[in-house]
Length: 423
Image: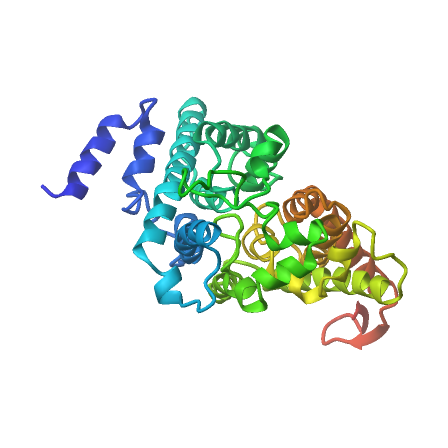
């Protein structure tokens, strides 16, 4: 008897019992369910919710692996300084860097998935419904948007809060109004703010007198945004150039540093028709528009150089996309099909406002120069309202066309000589 047949017999044994949802989730993780339709007309497709989630996870894996190498690289760079003759193979893609990063980041992944799926199983058993696959992507996103030194117990509490309050209280996957991963990130930021920021790059343990201080989160003092928020533009330019920002050789949260890999992940999601290109493009345009406005204010000399907003306002408008979590949020968070706008016109408005407000929050709050997750959560709340007015606008336009439509006589072949029809 094969493994699949044994699992099927075990499923029949558990069928109708309280633990059936939990067993079915394990049973269908690798195998398709046996309950399939056999009659009637159906639209058959190769994709389902589980395959969709796995596609998103595949687009996130390169960012995760790169983050592991980058965590080790940032440690050695903090200790020994940035090498003048930087070589990717000699200084970045090394086993030492990878092992240090993996030892620190993989526990975050394990806790995220372990605690999150446990909560999903508990709610499935209590409510008597099948375990939903929505947390497969959330479980991967959470380790990529938190500092590498986030305590595991803290992450566990945040995951429980995010899954219960951000999703289950609304009815589960497909019913939530807030992105669960961003809900977890928001809980961590507001509940434990000191752990979400720092003034030094994270260092693994005590090495050569350098101790662990701060984090590699986007708000850390030694990141690009940290230097700009403190007005240390010259020092930032000495440490990081445009190539470092684009390819990701800078401090930051685990998955957000490499704009290059995020761009590839976004193209993969667009090609596989998982994510909306309208939201991505409009969010980019929104961030560029806000950046241009700030650059224009600086060029017009409407703000003095000693202002705390000057450095971030004078930062090149297009470079905002290369630093912090803006690009990551646009590609992997704003495009969530559940919490985002559903109408095509609504997607343009929704995405544009996310990019616009992200840069606005980043500039006007230099104490926390990373506002993409706040902007996305805010627009999650307003997405249904945007869609409502888009639909109402379409109805009004059609009613107006109907009212102004031409009425003309039409000769028919029957007993009636004339009829009127609306064109």
